[in-house]
Picture 1 (cartoon, helix red, strand yellow):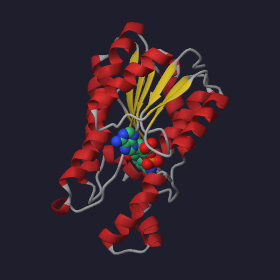
Picture 2 (tube, rainbow, N blue to C red):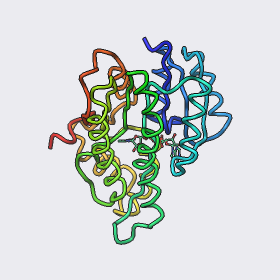
Picture 3 (spheres, rainbow, N blue to C red):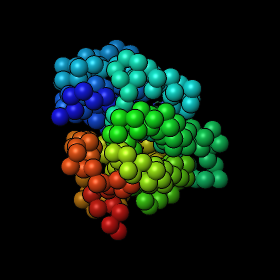
Length: 260
Ligand code: NAD
């Protein structure tokens, strides 16, 4: 149902973003991938997206900390595949540290990649969406858009900021056929989660198993990781015309985390 539409997904070389790229391709959208990683692996992902059904699939290595590169990525998408109808702000990193030891450069990087990049992407993509009178902006928030956990000051601040940005843009474009939503996952089993286990082991003096059961899933009542496919099907639903009244929301997919 997305034939003729173009999707741009930041941070889509792995994890949730890659899952989003695949389901959008399966439904006929052109896909612009973005993120870091091994070039051969990325080329293989591009080939897979085309096999899955994307008429066109291209990759941008734009660094989400660099506004000029973000604008160039959006411009290249316009030129090579048509302006983005579906924009997914998904790139993210984590850094775990008590705030009084939190490195300044890590704070800046987390805020830039999660929050400021969404601002720059939305700013660059909105004029074309307004001209078409249709658009879907989907941000990847987190349960940490809604509640906090200790030692994640930059991440929690950036994800809460994304919730505010979502609401603001939703109001600004409410009468123009464009919806803006923030999907808020609990813990999803991806490389980002895997990567924070050693830091959390160090910060709290715990074993790997203790970090998984007693820290990561401690507050996730279902005691199971969210699956990428579960997020992807919600994201796809938001792209449907039936979802046109859903805007400005934080949609929790967190196994009950924020019910507590
Ligand atoms: P991931 O590490 O698998 O993917 C992150 C993506 O962002 C990768 O493609 C990476 O290359 C890209 N990226 C990182 N820095 C970048 C930069 N400077 N410029 C461009 N791209 C960059 O992690 P994931 O778990 O799939 O995370 C995706 C999103 O989901 C993030 O925003 C994350 O905060 C959010 N999230 C994840 C979980 C979870 O449990 N995994 C839970 C809630 C929210």
